[in-house]
Length: 426
Image 1 (cartoon, rainbow, N blue to C red):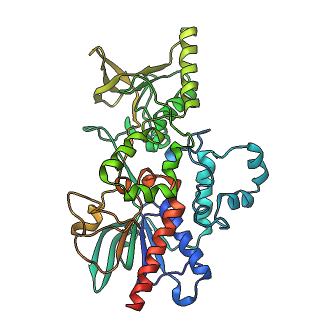
Image 2 (cartoon, helix red, strand yellow):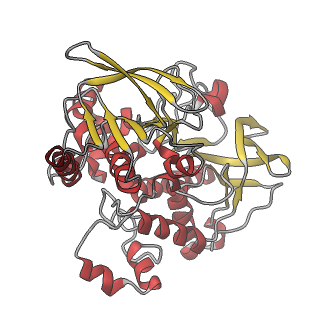
Image 3 (cartoon, rainbow, N blue to C red):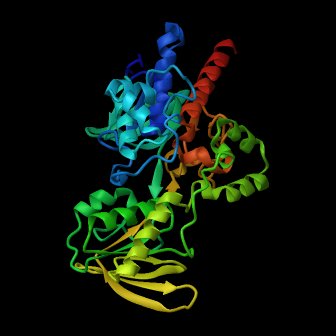
């Protein structure tokens, strides 16, 4: 079992953030402790700003499926016999035979969310929810994590810190999230709180999978409402999920990518952007086109795809948002009133400099990252800081994805154990 921590002690690993990445790490630590001698076991604690475990609840849209195989769960690629696997989850839920008969590698997003919650309940992790880390510093030969919890400031002493801060919503310059203009990440929450929909019209900005899913959801659930999708491309680009292209997400590809020079890394990221960025599953593209074409036939339009266009202005009032859309080919601009603008405009990685301060260079928030995900600091420090995320430039496209959580968690754990073994023999 994962050992509980004494707040006054120096904890072996303090994790910042408790989403899927550090959940995978907590499981790896627990599995290590279950077989290791007492002297080799690790203590760990985690802080998480949310008040309960959640994985993109605002985008748990009905019918949406995962874009990775269930075998890329929290553990299987690291430990095929783990009791925390998706297959163990299915057995525990009594759905193994039903899932097999379903004949798919891709569970729904809602089911995978339930799996993650099941794993979070099953692991005996010491997690302080409702607690936001504010700084990481050095003191007395170890690291110190400063945080604000429900009852005020707390301090955790650590030999190692693993930052898994997740991704931050990216909104266009000049846009501030509001009741009528918001990122798709919390779509369902914002729709529940929408003041009114008197114009019966939504605008979705973006051309990726999330944008297309939002368009489909709005078209399905607001049957008397127009849905307009604005994007700079002429049309959606299909996601490349072909077998050879998907090798870019293999664990072995991380080694290849890390050892390559910067020019080749940039080339690979550019070549394979359509596996992950600004692309849409072909079946969904066809379904949306089918709907739009059927409306052309019937003469009752609700779905409008505005390709080769961009949103150039949005003026929000209490009652609506006045948007201006420019056609990039003709230069013509059109202004209309919409009830809400949904920005499916992606995410940015957590900036480590906000936590690590002068431990990393101010103009390079990651400060460089070693192959084992250890952050290269501006000076030698007592202990180590690891990052789960924000490493696309060094480790490839799996940096912010679920695909490599199991392997990455094991590699970070091995690095911590190796450093401890070395310090004992030094």
